[in-house]
Image (cartoon, rainbow, N blue to C red; front, side, top):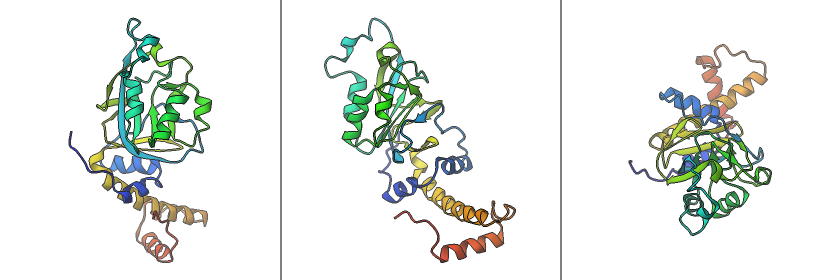
Length: 245
């Protein structure tokens, strides 16, 4: 896989403010239809927005002779290794085949990642201690609450390789963006471009909201025609547009 430089601070700030709805539209303009993670939800509605590169963990179905409690002994279990090695500012993304019947992690592991400086957690599996996790000031998305340990359904195998999560492909380094609606995965090669275009779209949509609240009809406004574009430029010149820095 091609190595890319870290996401610029400008793009990160832009992505922290634009919605996943805006981002999926920008991705659709570029031919990407399937990059919104399906079947997951944010546990803490008051958690901060999530932006960070993907650090991945893949699971296959558990097998009774291998997935026993003793598997956690020592320091080689891939789940624990992932928790202790996810880089600061990255999002741990877990492939559990969309099976939320067992937890892919719990409150202790999620808290450890938060304290280590991870940007968030995304799993299409379950999470145990979900009510405790929901109290954390930390963005965590999962397929649902689930008390059983991961060993009952999941066998962790690979770290930081391409995975599927919530029916979408996620490659290490892809930029994961989460808000109250869900999580979108932006291919790293186009992340800077998508961030800039999404910010421009976000600014215009803020103008559209102000116009609609003032009684304007949609015709000629959304999408914009010449008259609306002129009003938009005047609106920006008056200092009413949102800023990200």
